[in-house]
Length: 409
Image (cartoon, rainbow, N blue to C red; front, top):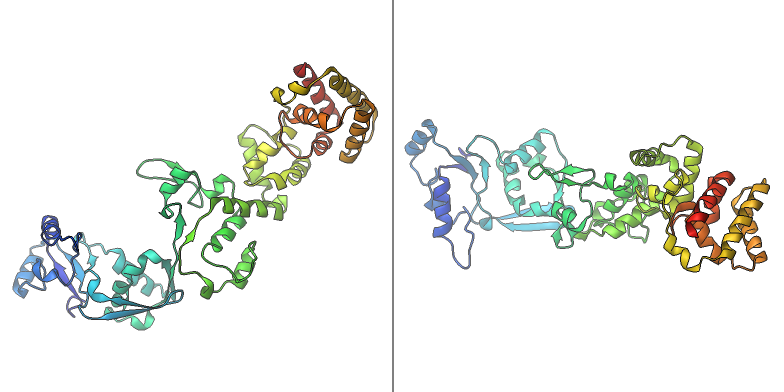
């Protein structure tokens, strides 16, 4: 390329480059570039005699190789998303292709790499559009134009303030990486979508719909459906704003959609990390099935169901005491006695017996369900209370009611 006049040696020192930026700085051009306006006033092989250039090269003088951008040429890119794009080559600076240490820059490396790997389609973010003229010319100057891939410049994923970045993760508390990532400079850990509790199916689904749709109102897509329905023509050219709440909605829908066997082991590990060892797999599966509709993230399963495996150590007494009475205490004592005598322990039966006894004691059933819930789980949360009692079993339910009665007095 140097021999053909498409590139040149540049011997400018860092100090000379900084001086150039100061000398050519104007209000209209506050950041001068090394381009066709300036290159003829710098120390490079375009302005030096051949003997001087050879002498410097033979002496091992530090230098870079820059592409020589044409002064009067329009470069056309056919983009699969944006259509035909025209670039004025005269406003593009002479990018460095080979650095002073002999290593290629991205501009040269990506072209050579794509050529050697016989890449047919190059997909990249729209932030690379300003560099596209350089890359197109490199394909041409290296004699590989007929092997050049098709181009697609994808829209950026936007955060609250412009392009989504790792700083958004730290500032707003949502993930930006698929898995945990540690900043090598600061050592700071940024939690990934996987560790946050997202399913792979949901992750793929919401990413696919950032900047694309199939032309319908459908939002939930399996990977197979995405493969079948995807078309590059429906990719948007404008940036897509990332909505973390919408991402969580996708995850919630996929938690409900998938069989619990698909995430059973992940959730089990979360329980074990918090000190609960699951020994009864059948019960564990039933618990997951019972609470999955209440879980947005996989990490929610613990908070929604740990009480099935661990009796409450503390109670939300303030939720019960203001309306607690001797009559309600007597009700639960009678409920214990009746429960001991029954052989049937199913959710519907427990509810019917509970409400019948409440009516006999002239107490509204609704006034008793909250105390029962707090007795069984410790607070105002969890699935339907009679489902909880049925899942716990008769003996455990009775034991938990007895444990709590003394606390409420």
